[in-house]
Image (cartoon, rainbow, N blue to C red; front, side):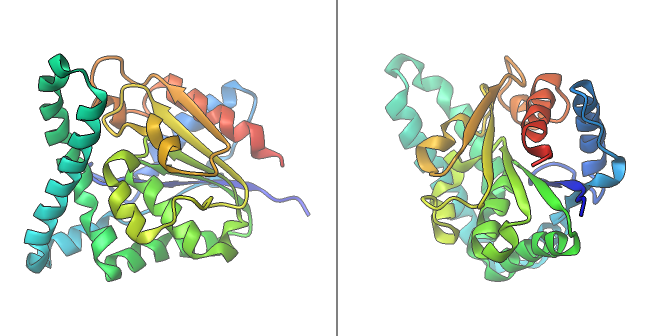
Length: 257
């Protein structure tokens, strides 16, 4: 029986994310796919949405305020230690702005790692989406969505077979690897099939160093999203042709398997 391939996105945190966030992404990606002679119908795209869970917990969860502040500080200090180790002394003054911006942005993921109810509710959104389709899936996890996808796939191996291709885009594991160790085994491949990391060369998430911490990657693809601004280099993967074309090529490679 012929099976249609689905392309499913999982968003990150920190942007104004509506439930249909994935539609502009899918339209842009469909254009890149079309340019390499792979026509994908609009109905083949979908997205997992969980920003409402975070919005609700941030409004009511006063008890976690201090713990969240400590988490953000820990994220910052862990990143500082690694950055200082790799940076010449005369360039270290430039690091503090990156540390401030990165820890504030990626520290917003606190609840996923330290609140079991949030963790389970978010994962369930992905499980429900995978269970609802009979088709094979290209799963594209963007930013914090890449970590959610990683953890979720490890927890429900029976659903992993549906994911023919797991693509992490702008993965912030550098900042959140200590939190990830609470929820996942970084030495175990999260999917039974293809596993790819798309890394912007100048991206505040530092996704290019994911292979240092994760085992089982089949491929890492480096792209230039923004040459000058690491924050825009993280936020514009689905706006820039170089990254869209790279993702399209990965999808095409495994689309008809």
